Image (cartoon, rainbow over all chains, first blue to last red; front, side, top):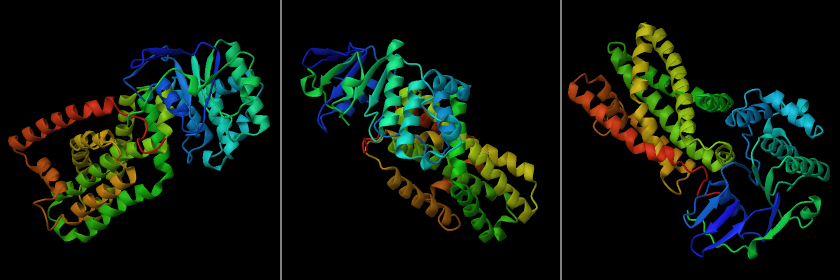
Length: 196
Length: 223
């Protein structure tokens, strides 16, 4: 994925399989992901290679009043997957059963703990087949056990040729992945501004 | 089509969680029906005003204002990231509200038939036509999503006040009553009224199409 800054005539490439974006609070990490995902359009920025991606936001944006199955099946249907449970069960098995699907399937999202909600959200997004995965603070609020499960899923995806952009405040995150490149937002040669 | 169905199913599940809105949609017109029952007994066509109210409420609150609410909740970031399909999103909301309005109309017409001994199927048929005639309201209301920095809650409150006042003043103030004017357009069987409705609907739909296609899934008020 390559990003061109039309004003400064500069460009920046996310060439690694796993790209980790670091930066202080309020420096525009989430805005960058919004732009990469194409949900914020900035006329001064041109992006090439962002047509096959999915974006996991910082907050777990699920419908809290619905059950896990209703949310998950809906998100899978958006990608054209109709036999949702079998699809997820298969993905769960391939990744060493990180999620207790049987227990969570009929639970209301609003009643799950923050960590469980995030794991289900992460699991759903990562189960979808895309070329790029943009993850905004994926490990925030998760315990060590769940974090390990999530990292393992990402590793398997990288092995399968998928690519990641991960925004994180965790300095140790780069050590978790063999093939990754850390990008400090302050050193990226782009100047963008989100116009409301 | 499968995508529209997915949106409709999800929205119906969400609506079923919120039984109060369904009860309110039934009880409000029913109370007014009971208050006005003496005038209705001899003029069944006046029920068209109630049907217009039900359809306008469904299409205004359940589509434009509901889309604002969903956008503010942040959930649309994920939805549009997986599948950027603003037209299907709109059609999903529209389909849901047609189902919702139809259900409310069935229950309301049943109550009206029990009270006044009208023919249920005639009422149902006429009310469906009125509901379909109100479809441009759905398109017009969706333009709210094109206005920057519009709060869902404030918009909902303002729209509730206007619609509620228009409904309450149905018997007294007809000159400036939007609901009454809309209802009159359906009962006026003149070619001028028909032409005005057709032209008006086409213009509303054409004006609303860019808003539907360019729908922004993130709120300007919340990250």
